Image (cartoon, rainbow, N blue to C red; front, top):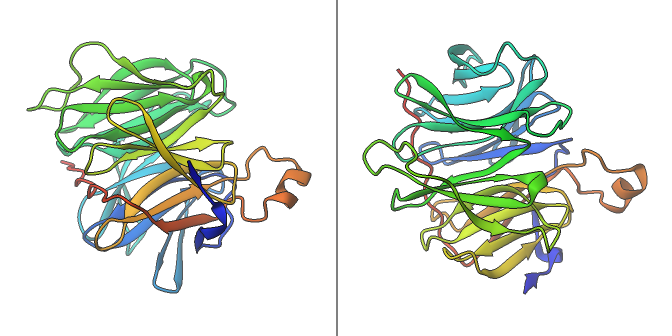
Length: 293
């Protein structure tokens, strides 16, 4: 069953060409997200709209402390101070390849940060998934086209990630002490027959997998065995990244995009690119802190 998009609330009306990378900052009780192609970081405090502009594309973030974020850009991972806009380079990220940019990423329960890279033009198999931990950046998976759905269960047992064009979501077992992958990845969702394209994802306290599905206008909820339970519909077909927010982490927020839509399609979707919010039947997991040297 898909809930009606008519009940969706607009959390932020600013239109992003490619809204992505939602992060709930549990210490600040504040949401952050990106307009990747617009090269900006967005947030809001009550009715105040906040924006930080950059000179390159950024796509994902983790929280370091009250005042700093770990940001992933097309050239590196950065320690970013919100008050001043100052960036300190933590590690180059395929900086020698100008055809590559960062995409989806999240902090893991060990204080590490997983980040995907992809071709700026969408060329197949040019991306990878990396992990930054204790000052080391290590490639985990290669030949990825558009990495998405990076998230982690509360029990520290597994990670998830997707390659959007292949309509596939994988699960990956993790070492409970270090968080590094163990064994081979396994298919969690094969969405090819349904012609669904997995984008960003997040896990709730029941171990359910909430996945924004590009082109579908929905965030779908699956149980830990990969069975579809229900979905939440939104008034933008190209939903991109969900996050749980609010004092009790029961508010589902999702970014969206108008990238690639024709003028006719954009006219039919005036809210494409906005950020939406709705209370749902779930409790999210507070994002872990990203630990940097």
